[in-house]
Image (cartoon, rainbow, N blue to C red):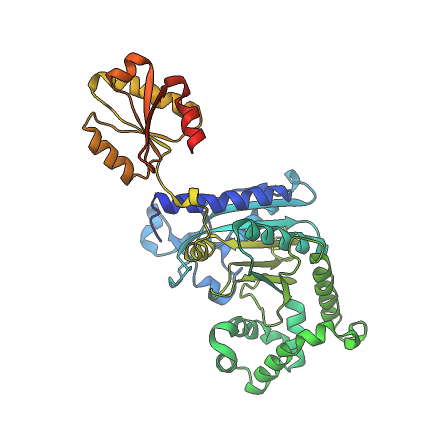
Length: 431
């Protein structure tokens, strides 16, 4: 968990504003949920490893000494959304499209771009099983990344049921698919031998583990081959999954995601609530992903008791900021700190008029800081330079008598006097 200094906050807000604008253009509406949830709301939704990363909050008051936790910090934004939909279904539209940009907490090991408190930028659609939902979601996150200046990202796509078929064909029983998926999700981190060892440690045979990896390696040809015979495959669920994947890829060609979508059969996504298509965004120079998501048609039903289809995607704000910072992707006006104008205080009698001048410049939309003490102008200029102020104004006795303001361009050093009513216009023109 970290402190954020002004430059950090400015960059974060820039990215958040881009995300919000794009999501709203796609028809998504804002939602916020509390930082704390009842612990039973969160546990059992993220798989074995996810449960271990939940920050639990001990009971308060008389139950404080019991060591029992009844609340927990939000682990992600998806499970709270499912709770909200279950509680407020009657107030929501038939197809509820929401975005949510809030912090979440995980008791994880900090690493590059990975923290214990971090923001997620989620977008979800509730109420439809159509692959148009996945295509629009992939398009929205692709447009966000393009607006931020990313060109080399890839949206990896797979399907949990298609992946389960590959596991079954390798001889792994359905009851052990969860263990296998946890291991396969680490393939990029620990390699094929590491996955085989992990699966063996979970009680699966090395032969089945290697067969599963071979099936995954050949799955691209399996999915796209015209002779793959999906209509006659004995696993009807896998047949539907393959057709769903092919339809998503076709639809993505008509969106902003065109050229960025790739079938990635090794993609597993560790969270246990995914039921259909799953997605992750990767860039070449960052281990792990910039975000991910998928379809979770069964999650809301855990709270509502009725099946409600849902699909979502989460962008990792912190990881995006890391990559953009390392690549120098922020615009100059976001990188630079400091005000447009520093208003100096020439002497004590000038203070009221200088305060009025600051108010006038702010009224014209300029970012204005006023030096808090009447002091030597040299010291005030030095402070303006340290603050990266673009301009400095001087309002001494002579300027006040003439109804003028002296403006100094801190980049060029040029000074000029203008009528006070033209000060903001002059600064904007030169800026």
